[in-house]
Image 1 (cartoon, rainbow, N blue to C red):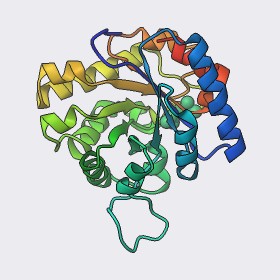
Image 2: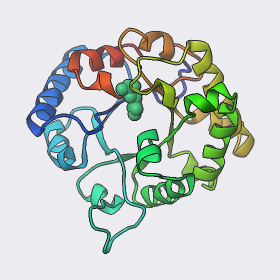
Image 3: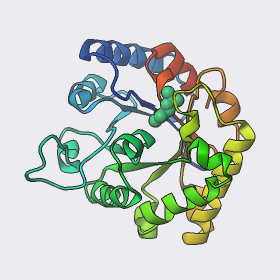
Length: 255
Ligand code: 13P
């Protein structure tokens, strides 16, 4: 862990929880954060679209930020079922996950689509959390570095240095998501350092040292401390373990 970078623990609730469950989870978290949080890490919640407004109002002045799990690649118009960054902005969301592996796999989102969404998010003052990661087949074929480099080149490296500095990167190896197979500390550190070196090559060492790179994929309250202690890991993007307040709070406290 490097003390000069912003530390972040983010909960991606995916397509889980009723509104009542989401509100209870948020209420519990608010209480725990008020009572127990003693570190400077930033906490983000990514609820399903339909709960964002309610959860955001519930949070009030508590130090939790709320974002969306996706956004449209258009700003407005006849795109039935889509939600734009300007809509997210109008309900107080200040971050958005872009390029999550589930969106890439099930909804065929390409690096180019991600690039468009990232541009829209930045134009509307919404922080893009750009998610990248290789599949198990790609890792078995030793292609993980190539894949990650392409996701960076085609998805986010078109940004100016100023805009890139507003983004967060989340490395989520697809084979670790929801499987209980966490990347080993060696695998996580190796890839995070690789990502940071590519940012330094593209922009500058200064920018590379400032950008937060989160780890995601079966991160839980048993392994978070070890992962967060790694030099180039600046926090976590948590799926399953963010659905229980105690587990998520333990992860926040692991920073
Ligand atoms: P899990 O923590 O459930 O493996 O999910 C990680 C993830 O996809 C977060 O975006």
